[in-house]
Image (cartoon, rainbow, N blue to C red; front, top):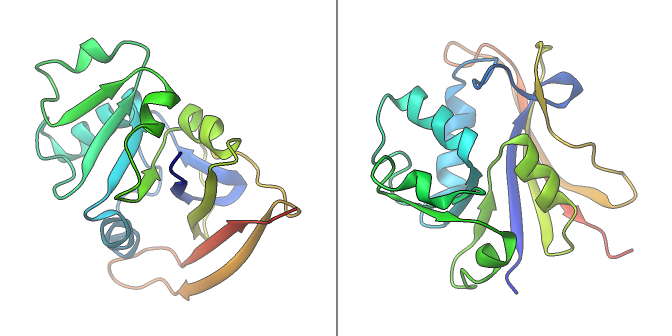
Amino acid sequence: MPTFEVIVAVAKDNVIGYKGQLPWGSLQKDLKHFRDMTMGHAIVIGYNTLVAISSMRNRTTKLLPGRVIYVLTRDPQKLNGRFPDCIGVSDIDSIARIGTRCRIFIAGGEDIYHQFVELPQTRVVHMTRIFAKYHGDTFFPHLHNTEWVARKEVFHPADQKNKHAMSFITLIRSAN
């Protein structure tokens, strides 16, 4: 079975979204980080995240060029015609059969993160910690310090294209 890597951006209190949007808007450094990390690999998202990305980009094709998008949904048929570049799958076992030739990134939303963070095959979390407080209605699960260890952290101050300071943090599941 392949291993999974979570990729997520969170504000204070683990907020990841509000009304289907990123509450902090566009942070160029984080978007570039996401693109650089996931380019050439597989991405797993839920249907609501797919719709949010489609809305943000104002299109239904070529949503994340250079990556294969798997949409975990109870009804994969609802992708037919509307999102031709995406592959609908109905369960985690289907994701596990993707293979191990490419990295598999889990990219949201809340329910998808909760399902995958619990799996022993999820070994890495790439977290962008945004140093700002936002109201949210979707949250990233709390990671226990005894199970997840920070291996790398790179701080980036706010600038003209990024209204908030942020850190890119790599967390590894400990062998306990």
